[in-house]
Length: 210
Image (tube, rainbow, N blue to C red; front, side):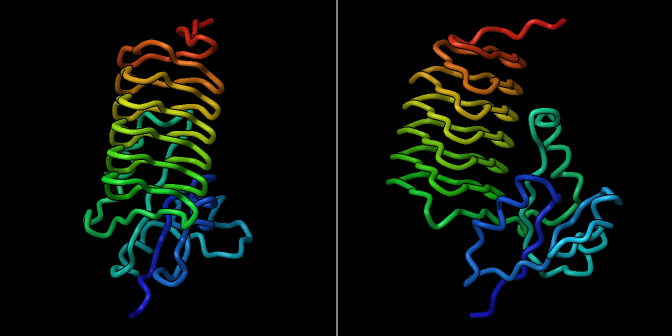
């Protein structure tokens, strides 16, 4: 079987980590796509191209992993702005991730090494989960959310869309994190969080603006 060509957008931390997750028997990585001219001028082992590459390589599959703690709210906007046929988007799952019974994973997801998704967990579209995170049974992670490394999401938890869950966070079972929320690094979340919240700490409390 011929390999599928793969482009990654953009050239960022998530994109670099995705390189370690690619199944080389299935995909041929041909480069990054990035809007930043300075990045495109860097000397890298891989091509960093502008958006015309999406048209030039019109048969290539695409993994789109923009966003971080400063821009997670606009992830859906960035991905939609690529203007590509959604059928070109693919999910990439590291071979050392563990996917349990009846787990659902959407399109354009990146699941990194050591991630454990247990029975009946549901991962939406355009979700990125960093290494060694555990999503327990019957939990749901909404579209366009980013989950850091070493996060524990207990059973029956619901994470809304466009959320950012900082690395080292623990989320108690059966609670809800409202859409467009941010949870800071190393937090312990013991009760539900309203949409558009920013919380941190042990236990997690609203981040006060200075």
